[in-house]
Length: 434
Image (cartoon, rainbow, N blue to C red):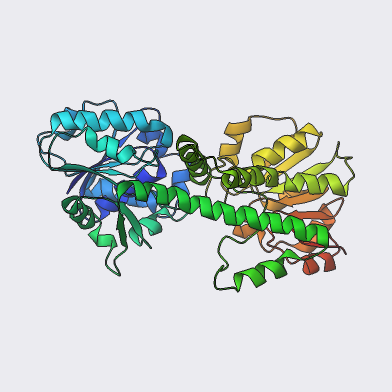
């Protein structure tokens, strides 16, 4: 099939590479503000396993052409009509989606499937279809279900596709488009378009609720002197609950997760149904981003000025270079307000952090290794659970940290083991003293 992919998001890059890899003829139209020459150097794309390699391979093989938006669409497409327009745009790019569909409708009178892979408000896919003028031109919803750090795997070996489509012929076209990635078992779950759009938002709302609930339980466990790990294990063993997304921590972030929650809140508000639960989930998460700071404050009874803190991790999760809505941003502002100097290491996200906060007199970015951040520090804070942080040299840390305090924001360490090495351990609902 002949496919036009529009967007500069991870979802656009992944769709362009994957569809071209299985023989479709793909044109990837990137945005003017994020052209290909910029994306090709972006840390988030370089760090995404397989993806950049697959894009280059598809270009070399001729199945993929990458162009920057700004060219005349008629000149870009030539005489041969499109089969599929794949829209993978950010939530604030709805107007661009409308413009592109409107332009294409005026140029093409042959059958066309518009795949809305963007997280737009519920009902937008139907509005896009209203711009099309041919009986065989249909818009379907195929919500973006990718995870940063494993986008290629998630697209090419999907656990499921949520297909919002009321038209049988369009559904068959989408199945054929993705047939190469749907061989092991039928991964399609078909439903009406609005249902698919709302399902995507509701999934992330539920996951966020589980995380926030577990964080509340961790706070309660802390106040009762209970190790929250016992509680987590007991809850997860209940088949009605399970273990997924039951890990307490210092807050979640990310470009997709956070904005999907806000989009769900907007949907609730627009329908006249205010959600006290969703508002509470969002509030709990913002509150939890300050958890490590509050533990530091409590340990030193508010006397923080002049301390040096080593921070391990800035990315919103392991495997990505992004810091969108990451807990580290809230943590840094709180520490700097108290005159605390921060020495920070992250294996991927330092360029993004430098771009976000600039040069700050109380911030030192450490690019060599994690222990560089600990030299001369009083305290270690673990914010992002990169694999390189899981098994540190505790003797070396004990010698480096002046106050011998470890604040574990992801509960990846064994409290008793850390304490046996002579360090004070404080986690999320867990603690141990030497």
